[in-house]
Length: 223
Image 1 (tube, rainbow, N blue to C red):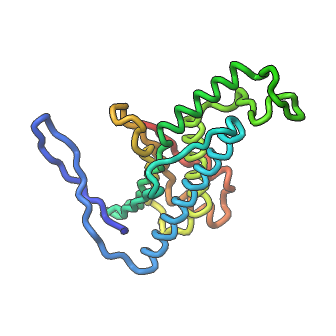
Image 2: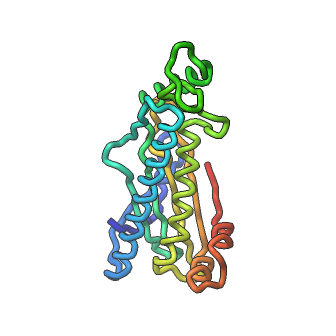
């Protein structure tokens, strides 16, 4: 559903807290369709990032398959700002399922500690069959996943953002919430904010700047 975000302040017992009231709004049919298409592109991008991580993880530890939660997939909410300042899309990527992540890391440590095991069948490279070196370039499932998600969202902005009806003076903002923490007692994941000006998307659409130049104009914040 495409919605307008209206900010409100709520006084709570512990102080002043910011709250958000979401109010339905009517958009021209063609604009609503463009927003829905962009939502679909965002979902596909996150799904692609999860597939890439799963494939990379199988290269590192073939015996363990990383699982993701929730099973319902990626959640995307689109907000059209009521002051005509632009579009905000909130993305909740599925988190890595805790048990599969723990098993993965345990097997990876074993493989790193025992790269050669006596009496174990070996492949053509001399490594034990059924294992793969993790290599110094693999930083772990969580960090690798966040990097894949970040790049997938940047690519979506560059490849699909210019199809949105964004004007000069407006902005396109993506907020990736990091999914739900694997441990309910753990600290909430940090959010990734990506924002680009409408002027830059228009320049990209019109061929006045290159894709690489447009990529450098996307502001990235994690907090």
